[in-house]
Length: 140
Image (cartoon, rainbow, N blue to C red; front, side, top):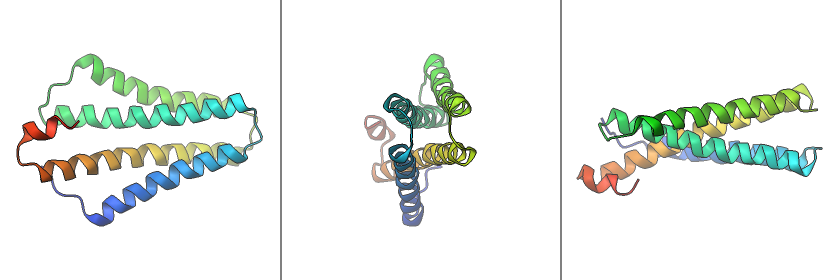
């Protein structure tokens, strides 16, 4: 089931993650909003990235037969969806142009997807380097 990801896919995943995060942060830096609003959007990005990686790991663990508690699995889904909802509500109520709202939404989703791809590539690469599944599990 674990195939080594190609170097092109690994590079594309990392580039996409960096581009998404950088675009989002440049947009925040240049935005005409109060510092507390910028902090809100930054915190949502960090929360979203962490929760998306956690979700990818818990889903993958379940597929591979590694025990995952139902509460952690549920919290992973909940926190990922919550990050998306919080961004949506924040943008819905923000005094921004529609194009700016779309920019933040797309760069946020791009970053989440790329974080999942980077986590998958990291896990697949590590699994291929170590022959024993037990050795792989201790690094997660």
